[in-house]
Length: 123
Image (cartoon, rainbow, N blue to C red):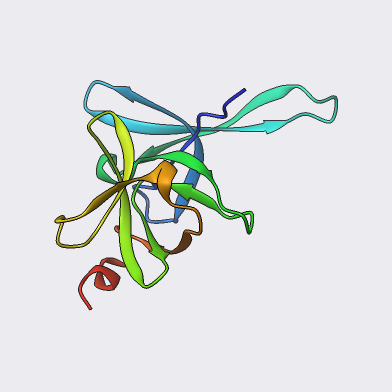
């Protein structure tokens, strides 16, 4: 089964939170979960996040790093960022002139994200 999770920057400035995304009216939230000692899923905390920072979990690299929408990746010598476009997750160059379906990239390494490391896209 596919694990559908999200991350978002907390509105209170305390970093990232991971979990389930939902929106109520004009506010965006991530609902975090944890397991009880018995193995049951429990709701842990609901945090308001910056809507533009929310990104979906895309998958895992060979090294075990998780990739999210909005991550900046190194693919060989090429720097790209992950975005959702044309109903697919793609890796796009900073100039947005070249786009590759993420499923065609084999050795991606996350080097940052567009929200905290945008300078990586402007060498």
